[in-house]
Amino acid sequence: MSTDRLAELALNLSEVNARVDAACIAAHRPRSEVQLLAVTKTFPATDLDLLAKLGCTDVGESRDQEARSKKEDVAHSLRWHMIGQVQRKKAKQVALWADIVESVDRIELAQALDAGAQAAGRCLDVLIQVSLHPVGLPHRGGVSRDELAPLAEVILAASHLNLAGVMAVAPLEGDPTAAFALLAGSHQRLLSLAPQATIVSAGMSADLEAAITHGATQVRIGGALLGNRPPLK
Image (cartoon, rainbow, N blue to C red):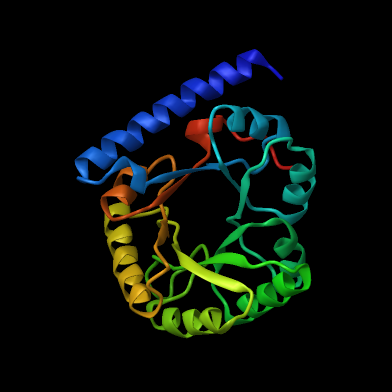
C-alpha cells in the first residue's frame, strides 16, 4: 500500500471532516448525527482498505459487477452501499453484496430486491430515492411526491427489506438549498408512515453544507475525499 496515497487520503478526509464539523455547528446539530459515506466507485480496492485504516466504515458503489469484484479484494470489513440505479434484472446480484440500496424508486425494483434478499437469506436495508427535479424535466432517478407513499407501503410489507430512509441527488442546475428543503418535507411525510426511516442521504462534495442544513444524516463524498475519478473501464 502506498504511504503517499495514505497521506493524501488522510489529508482529504481531515478537510472533509472539518467541513462537516463546520456545517453541523452552523446548523446547530450534533456532529454525531451526520455520517460520511465514501463514494469509491471506479477507485481500486486498495483505496478502500486505506480508507478503512483511516476509520471510514461505509463505502458507496454504483455498478454491480465492479462492486462484487472489489468486495472480494478488500481485506477490511465495510458496510457496502449501492448508490447507483439498479436494473430489475440485476436486483438478485445486488442483494448478494449490498448492505443497503439507496436508489429504490420503483415498486417492481423493491419487489425484486425483496426476492433477491430472501434467496440470499438476508435482510436488506433500502432507501427510497426521491426526485428533486421539477415535474416533466429530465432527472437522475427518484419518485415524485405522489409516488412516495405507495412505494413505502410496498417496502414496509416486504419480508426481507427494511425501509431505512430517503436519498436524493440535487439538480445540476439551480439552488441545492431549495432542493434539500423539498427533501426534508418528503422525509417528514415518510416518517409518518415509517418512524424507523431516519436516514436522509443527501449532499455531495459540492453541496454537503446545504444538505446538512436541511437535515442530511449522511453525505456522499467522492472527489473531495478520493480526488479525480479514474476513467471508467
